[in-house]
Image (tube, rainbow over all chains, first blue to last red; front, side, top):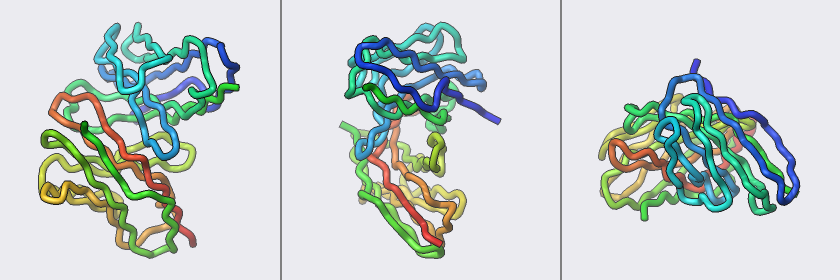
Length: 114
Length: 113
C-alpha cells in the first residue's frame, strides 16, 4: 500500500520559533509537494521538489523554506513562525513519469502558532 | 491565470439523495481535471479524473464529464450514503509534465441518515 506519512498530526508552536514539518514517502517517488489548506481557499502550493536536492517555489513560498536531502523525505521549515501560518499542512508525492496521474497525500499536520 | 471555481458549501443531504457539485475552470491550455476527496481526519485522495474533452471519469458511484464548451467538470452521484460525507475538491493541471495542481476552495458535504 502506498504511503505518505507526516511527522505530527497536531503541533502547537510559539511566534518566532523555528518549526520543522517532516514528510516521508515509501513509493520511491521523485516529485514531492507541500501545500497549506485553509477554509475557503482550498489547497495552495508552498514548494515542490522535482527530485533530491531540487526545489522550486510554489504560489505562496514567503516565510517558508524546504529541504530534500533524501529521495523519501521532504521537510518544510518555518524559519520564524507567525500566527498567520496557523493552518493545515499537507504533503504529497508523485512519480516523475505519472504525467497527469494522481498525487498521493499524507494525513496532514494541523499547526497552531500562538 | 489558471483557476478552478466550485460551488460553495456546506451541502447537507439525506441518504439516497442526488448530489451535484458544480466545478468550472479557467485555463490557457487544455487541462486535465480531477476530483479529490478528503474524508474526516485524512489527507486527500483521488476520486476520479478526465484528461480530455468529453471524457467521463467515474469511481465509487461518482461521475464527472469534462465539458470543454462550458469549461465545466461537475461531480454527480445518484444516491449518496452517510460514508460520502467529506470535503470534495475540484482541481486541474496543465501539460503532461506539469507538476502543479490548482485546486478549488472545496465543498463540504454532509449526508444524514
